Image (tube, rainbow, N blue to C red; front, side, top):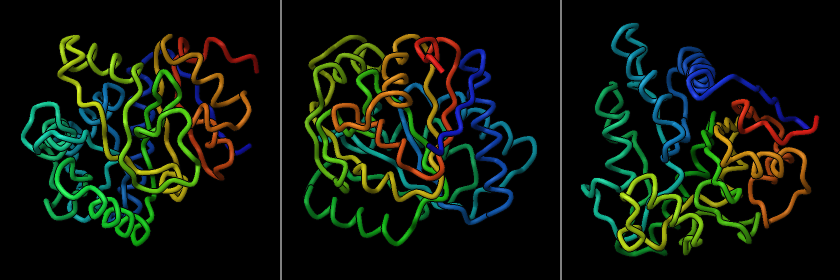
Length: 245
């Protein structure tokens, strides 16, 4: 198993650690391909990237970014769209070029967009793919039961994911949460050279245990990472609390 598991005290330390890894890649390879994630997990990491850009002038002008997923049915400017999230938390605060930012389109011709995004991904292998971890073990929006062979696809979200997202981002309003999304498939994620996964908090402990110590099964999508040659997992003490090794 090639998982490098780093256990830190808390979310702040996890974010700092992830930031160091991303910064050193960007300095070493200014035109790096970064696979990015949304959700509550990377928010502090993005703050650190913005701060560092402001203070130390670390440049992203030649970096290309590829986001994991987007809700289906939200316009770009909707405050909960991932397009909006990425611009608010990262892109508008750094010197990245607009044309170097890639996010799946959450409306219109879904099949065509999935095809186009897959083409883009196979032409641009990610140097690092950043991942969070769903409490049900999903990565991207690849919910339990998703085939490991999938490429970019349209997916109906599981009840548990809708609930989690309602609580975190939609003031608890289940009806406001889109019921489907477009996501990079597990196959696309596995094509990245280096996978960097961050998981914090007690809610994630069970998924973390399954991902690291469980069997590789489509019922826990993140378990496939056991088969990737270069994975760094950064977890806080709470998320690591059920690990036996």
